[in-house]
Image 1: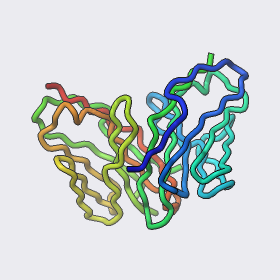
Image 2: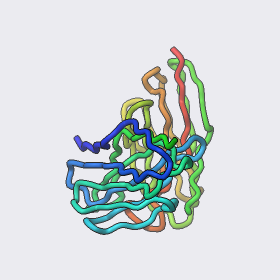
Image 3: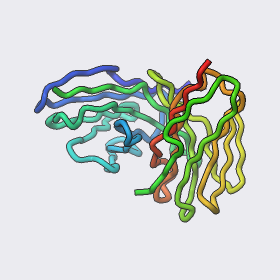
Image 4: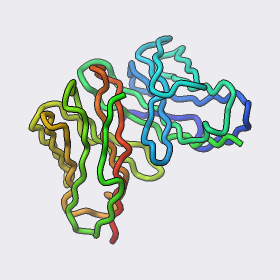
Length: 114
Length: 113
């Protein structure tokens, strides 16, 4: 079974802090994604990566950056955390070989910015 | 941004009832439609990936159909059980990308025992 592991289930940080959310997958997937989930808004794509050191902006990249130094790890960085970044963050991964592969998700990190 | 809509937003049914809900998407430039189940405190789980008009897929008591000409997919659950309670998400591949998805807001299903 594919395993996507997010480093924390719950995280509390202060406004202005630099925050790192880590995600690791163990299935040699090329593609990795970061989403946030907010009530009434659905899953929204922040950034994704289709290869090591490659990244593309999703629909809501403002205030975030990402890092993919190794194939199995994809980090989401909140450069200067703000209260409007309080949310549930989900990491996902998928194969790029073959067509229209499903995404496999981690359990999520519920982040609170105080 | 692709517009993927799901209805209803939430649904309460009794154990044993059959139910269905809808995902609507633009019929032009369609590539693939994904269904996921997201139970509370767990990770979203892929149910189906559908690409062809008229596709029907089945997994136990859950099945899905796809109409790409009119831009909708139905998810059916036969004989709902409390363990079916979850948010059901649909998503479409965006802009021809075979890996980037745009999600609907989901349908929250509650099955009462």
